[in-house]
Amino acid sequence: MHRPICIAHRGFSGIAPENTLISFQKAIELNPDAFELDVHLSKDGQLIVIHDDTVDRTTNGKGRVKELTLSEIKKLDAGSWFDTKYQGERIPTLAEALELAKDRTMVMVELKAEGTAEKAVPLIEQFDMVDQVVIFSFHSEYIKLAKQLNPNLSILHLFWVNPLEKEVIVPHTIINRTLTAFANCIGINGNALTPKLLHTAHQRGLGVMVYTINEENDIKKMLDIGVDAIGSDRIDRLLKLAG
Image 1 (cartoon, one colour):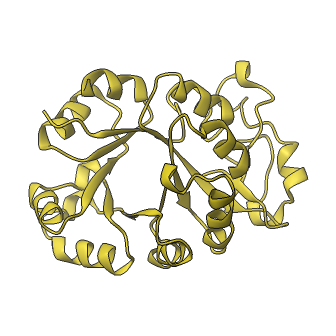
Image 2: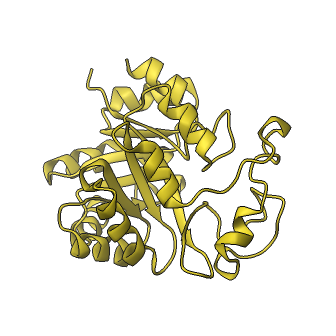
């Protein structure tokens, strides 16, 4: 059986607060192929590792990330919402996450907001991690810009497809958007993947990643289908089943 690339989604987010250094560290300890994170820009132009465009869900604060400074963001508790034992865990910067991962594992950096590509690519170059990072996004223009800034970067184009409509989605539409954005891999929600899309992507020389696959039966299904990469909140289950 073909072994896919195993990705810890927002770190080991099944057991630790997502997108925090403790979550990344717990993932690294299991030796995944990569961990994944999301970046937004703060008010003062710093790359902040957080999924949402507000701090409301994953911290004890409120407000839009782009309207808060780095120092304001660093005062927030990003752990207690998940479990009181993680009280005091902070929102990291991309630099802190890269420093933790350097020479240990691949990092997948999802660009969530305008202006992130222009900041992220030079930082990745500064850490000498171009061959250790994959840049990806739902936004074609962000990943296209990242590839133009450094042609050596690996690029993935994310898509979300309504599972009820997966049989009517023409694979070539997704594939052409991916190729136009200079990406070499497609990312799609696992419940919308079809054998036709996987086959057509492989014919065009593109890899296929599925997200976010957490239950053992779903992981086994994706392994049987033969996807190239799987993102999971439960990296422990994924690694055990992938072998």
